[in-house]
View 1 (cartoon, helix red, strand yellow):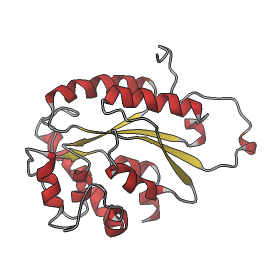
View 2 (cartoon, rainbow, N blue to C red):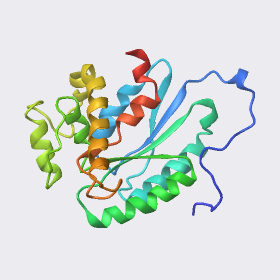
View 3 (tube, one colour):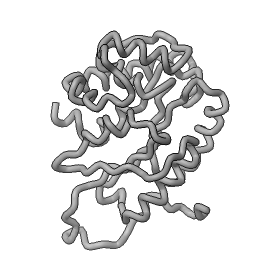
View 4 (cartoon, rainbow, N blue to C red):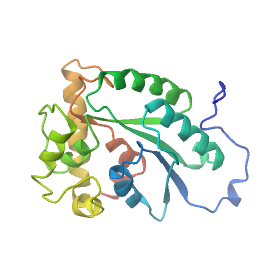
Length: 213
């Protein structure tokens, strides 16, 4: 059981001069879904090493709890530049909306970022090609739309990052515009109505992608 005290990003006493390793990007993704891991592993760089939490949790709160435990087990530290993200798809599922808000409260207490895509992660891929506020009735509809731009797309396609990485700046802009659109239309963040949207752009901004543009 997770202890009630804050156990996320704790300030640890350590000699910063002795720290030589790269900063860690620790991700918690849903179940056995390879979509996010195949894409995010490409964020390995001279500055960051990417790690993924073990386990096959699909409920948001379980994912957050796993992320907190592994962050501590790896002796990571926010003050040193280590970052942790929990990636969740809303899946057009009212029950999951309730679970997301529970996970959000736990994540905030532990300074973990919940990265929500509504309805699914592929909205982030679409943002590389187009800004569109079109509504989707299922994740499959989003995937069919992606195939207009990546005809051979599947959730196990391991070359997506290479195919679209030159459009990341555009994706960040479009994802931010979607967020503004939803807010201007009085839609509540993290609820099913906040769609289409994706928070994935926040990862790229936090790791300094725009600084290199």
